[in-house]
Length: 202
Image 1 (cartoon, rainbow, N blue to C red):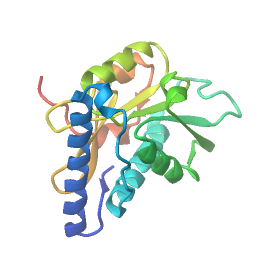
Image 2 (image 1 turned 45 degrees about the vertical axis):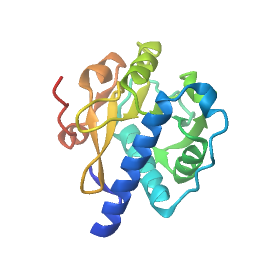
Image 3 (image 1 turned 90 degrees about the vertical axis):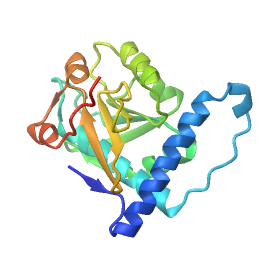
Image 4 (image 1 turned 120 degrees about the horizontal axis):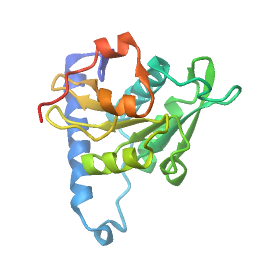
């Protein structure tokens, strides 16, 4: 399961550079004191960013579809809830791309911000890089069947059960943390296991 972030190689290279710049900007923002971030400049949604968000949305739906959930999750007649802890503009774009999706025949409901952080979701995406943040959220959800997805790098994980990793050729791949999945009571399908990147060395 590999999603290419551009149909042609030049577009893929441009999007890869865009994704890497986005990741670098997020990591820089994490290091800046909160007071210095009180008035962030609005980020304009470019065609490349929109494509990246569409691909991320596709992965989130595919992960939910290819995870074997415990019995009764979600309860009968309830939608699959996907939580987004992301920049508001990115969150809106991902939510829009998920609007017509279904998981195991259930509609997808997207929540953002504090409602997503409360953990009352089946899948939660953490856009901001940082292994410590991912591990803290994972610890707060301990024992609950919640799939945590984050952005890792080829060398490091995000602390989530699944890392999204931008490759040098412009594709977006994923990497599973089997221990984290087991701790949440979740089982990946054989297809999900087969196509996962290997875990980075400690």
